[in-house]
Length: 197
Ligand code: SF4
Image 1 (spheres, helix red, strand yellow):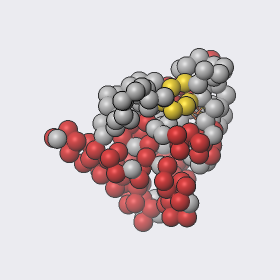
Image 2 (cartoon, rainbow, N blue to C red):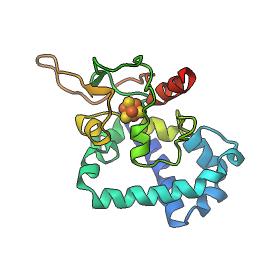
Image 3 (tube, rainbow, N blue to C red):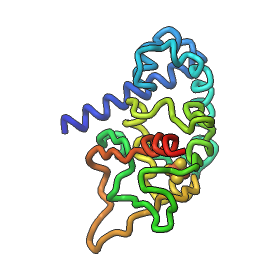
Image 4 (cartoon, rainbow, N blue to C red):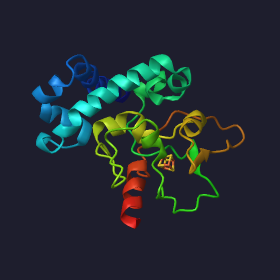
């Protein structure tokens, strides 16, 4: 119970920085730069990331309007799932929910050349040249949807992910809320892809 309260409070703190930046059009990110970069990029050295402040602020506005305008997006994003706010941080998809497809042509820890999930929402944290995510393993990544993607069939369908599929349920098994902190992070897969690429 205490842990759930802690996870919820961390989430609240992490996400509160986003509307603050949105409402100040990025000014808060400059004023509190080390805090922002620690939370969103796992790095106190804000001078390395300040170029992303404005694009990410605008991206937050874009996601906000997307949530309002697109019921399909709203339904599938883990950000909107109530139970998710009390679940432990994760840095990879939950193996009790999803598995790598049998016809996936790359190693299980690689996304090959695919970046579809990042590109679909045009995420400014994703570097199209390197395939790396600047936010990987940050508090934002671990506590919000990136760290647990994909977490449902709807997410796989929305991003047309060619790698993951819903794990068939064993008889009597239910899809419990994610537990543990797996390390098969998509970010690691992206990094692996970059290394192998
Ligand atoms: S998780 Fe799926 S959609 Fe995202 S990069 Fe990997 S294979 Fe592509």
